[in-house]
Amino acid sequence: MHLPLRTVKRSALCAILLCMPLRSTALPLAARASHPVSLVDDPRVQLALDWFKKNQTWIDAQQIRLTEIPAPSFEEENRAEAVKALLGDSGLTVHTDKLGNVIGELRGANEKEIVLVTAHLDTVFPAGTPIKVLHEGQRLVAPGISDNGTGLAGLLALVRAIRASQIIPQRTILFAANVGEEGEGNLRGMRALIDAYRTKLRAVIVLDGSGTDHVTTKALASRRMEAVITGPGGHSWSDFGMPNPINALVRGALRFINSKVPVAPRTTFNLGQVEGGTSVNSIPYEAKLKVDLRSESEEEIVRLEIAFRESMSAGVRDEMDNARDRTKGRLDWKINVIGSRPGGELPADSPLLAALRSADEYLGNQSRIERSSTDANIPLSLGIDAMAIGAGGNGGGAHSLQEWYEPADREFGLKRALLSLLGIAGVAPEKGSH
Ligand SMILES: [Zn+2]
Image (cartoon, rainbow, N blue to C red):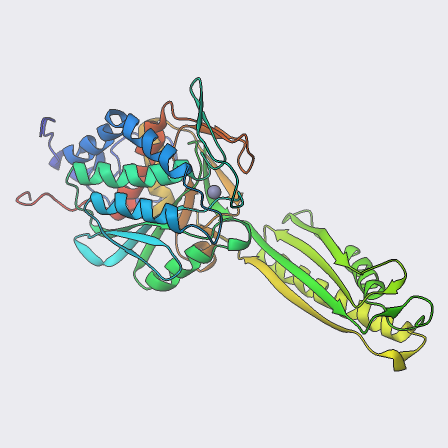
C-alpha cells in the first residue's frame, strides 16, 4: 500500500464518525459513539475513495453499456444478466432470485447483520424504444441514462472500490440490482428483497439517478385504484330505464371529487383515466375509472382510499335506486388496487442519516431532505432505516427520450455513497492490527 499509514489510535477518543469538525448539531451522540475510530483515517478507505477518479473511464463505459440493454419493467432479464456478470467478476458471491433481482454478497465480519445497497434495473421505456447513447459534448444522452444508468454504474463502482482496497466490512453488505421500481412494477423487486432479508437487515441505501444535492428519507405514500362497474347493457331506446354503469360511475365520481383533503399533510387525488361503453346508442355493459391518490401521511391515504370505495358503492346504489326498470338487471362493481406504495420516514436520529451527514460534512457537501416515491418506501414503511441518494454527476429529463447525464465530478457523489455505506456497515480491523 502506497498510502502513509496514519495512526488510528489518535481518534479513539474523537467519537466523531469521520473526525471532522461538526457544524451540524443534528448528529446524535449515539451514532458517533458507535464509531469511535475514524473511517477516513483508515488507509484502505482512502484507497477506495481514490479508486473512483482513477477509474472514471471504466465507470462511464459500464453505464453506457448497461443503458443500451433495454430493461422495461417486467423485462429486465438481459440487463440483469450483464450486471450479474460484472458483480461476479468483482469476486462477490452472486445469485438471481425468482423475481429477477441480482444479489451480490460481500461477507462482513458480522454475518448476522446486513446492509443492503440497491439500484433498480428497470426503465419506464417500453420494449422497442430505440436506445443508443449519444455523446453531445460533456453529455451522454439516452432514455434511462441517468435513471437508472447512474445508479447501476454507481453500484458497480462501489463494489470495485471496496474490493480493490481490500476492505472487509463489519456488517455483511448485499449489493442488489433490483427489478420493478417504475410504474406498475410497484416496487416488487424491493418488496422481495426486504421479505428475504428482513430479520438481519439494519439499513438500506438506494442509488437512484444522479446528483448529490438531496437525500430522500421520507417516503411519499401512494395508491392507484381502478373502479370497474358492470351491468347487462342494452339498447339506448328499447332498454331505457335499465341501470347504466357509466351513470353509476359518474354519480360515484362526483361524490368522490367532493372529498375534502388537507393542505398539510399534503394530500392529492387525480381521476386519471375513464373507459367504457361501445357506442353512443348503447347502454354500456362496463365502465372503468382509474385514480391516483397521494399523501405525506399514510393515514390520509387510507382515508381517501375508503372515501373512493364508499363513493363508488354509493354511485352504484344511487343508480340502482333511480333505475326505472330493475327487472332488466343489476349492476356489479369492484375496486382493484393497481398500485400501492406505503409511506414512512427515517427518524431524524437514525445512525444511517448520521452516516450520510458525516459523509456530507467530510466532503463539504450540502444536501436537503426530500420526500419522494422510491424503492426506499418499502423498508421505511416497515420501520427499517433506509434512504435514497443520487450516485453523483448531473442528470435531467428523467422518463423522457431526451434524458441526459454529465459524468463530470461523478466521483464526488460516489465518495459520498461510499462513506455513507461504510459509515453504516462499519469496516473490520485489518488482520493483525489491534
Ligand atoms: Zn429511478
